[in-house]
Length: 340
Image 1 (cartoon, rainbow, N blue to C red):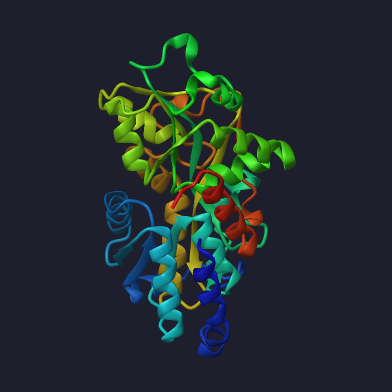
Image 2 (image 1 turned 90 degrees about the horizontal axis):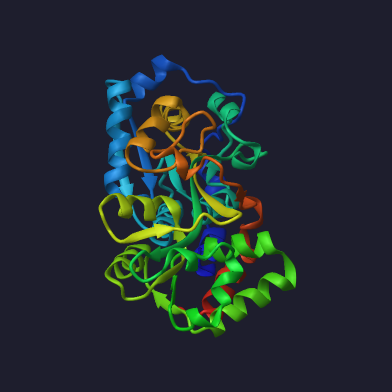
């Protein structure tokens, strides 16, 4: 998230502490009668409106009488809205389903409550917050997408380093809205080696793309043969729609999550925790599977299962993405690849 967003959030800390709303704790349990009486829950999310709506409808079906209200925006706009509301002393979101950037900014500013869902026991430790503020609902493995008409089978990259081959000069696209990829590879490759790799890749005349949607569409249209920071799920979805694309099964795929968390100042705290439990439950994770997302829960495989089977994942260390460090890394990503 942009530093100005984090800075604005920091100014809301005092306001937040003065509002007097109770913080949720791991020890608190869900009172089902109270949840039904509360009658509603508001979820803020940066995933697509179609997908968050599917989750909301499934929750309403599972818990009749509790209405779900939705606000959907990109991660920066989402954070800005919560900042504005916190400054005004409002507490409109009950559940947050968003990227690590937004979630950690909210956690850092005490806008999130601690709640360890009983469903969290079914998740890898790397996908749960040791302090109890969040659990991953979905993972996004990052890989190299390619156009099957422009890249021969024996040319498909097998390692990230393969993108440095001179034959790909001026032919590799970079999605400007995925700094998580940069941070993940910096963590995976570590230190100066990682920075030199990124600089060398940028020197190979990469092509900027403004969003995942544009990068995917242009890749399918043959505007370029390689998309360096694609997600395997997004590529697979496009492939299933008969687009001439596929994704590389590299030796290691870094992955970043979509996190679920609850508000520290919800006026429907039981319904909020119930929604968090639902998103992490088998039922909720199967909804994610049905909308072509990759569930984070151990026992729920995506569709198709080979999106995860036999693949080694490197989960980004979420707690290293917080505050100014994350801002600096995102700025470095944009500067390195000359992105707006």
